[in-house]
Length: 112
Length: 112
Image 1 (cartoon, chains in turn brown, green):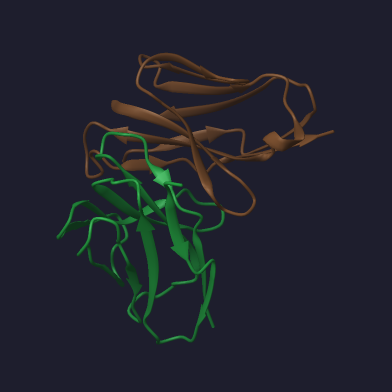
Image 2 (spheres, chains in turn cyan, red; image 1 turned 90 degrees about the vertical axis):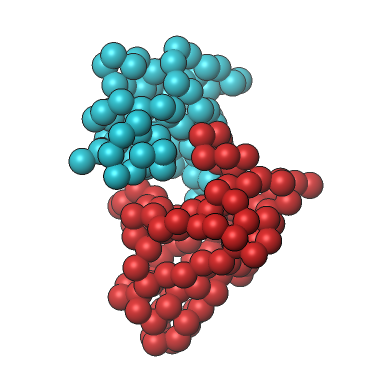
């Protein structure tokens, strides 16, 4: 079964802290996505990557294909970063080939 | 502004009634998707369409139906056969299946 595991499930941080959210998956993938879901429910795509590292503002996403692992980092966190962060992957093989499989999300709360 | 719209944001229906959720995009995207989100679970794919007049079942298609008569529109009907329809429904689109997906704001359906 193709699975996506995220950790931690919940994360509370103080403003200014460096934050890391992890995502592990079980088999070969063609791409990995990081998404942000705000309390109202809307989802925004942050990154799509298949190798290496991408950076956008205070957000950095990395992926290690050999270890089947990705991390999302937030530098100098701010209360407006409070949201649910979701990892999703497109697997190469299996019944879900090509479709995105989503992790359960990491709920981040940044306190002022 | 280009984007995806879903209406309404909140929808209430009586048990046994069919209900149709709207999804419209003006991004000129070929591919469109419907996902369901339940508390504590990752998003799950209901149906997707790669091109007009074509659509495929996702992982949890039972009790749902779709149509894709126009490129811009991908309505989802939740039928009375869906045993547990109360959920948050998200529509998404992308240029094709391998690229970044853009999400709508979602519709929260409650069946009474």
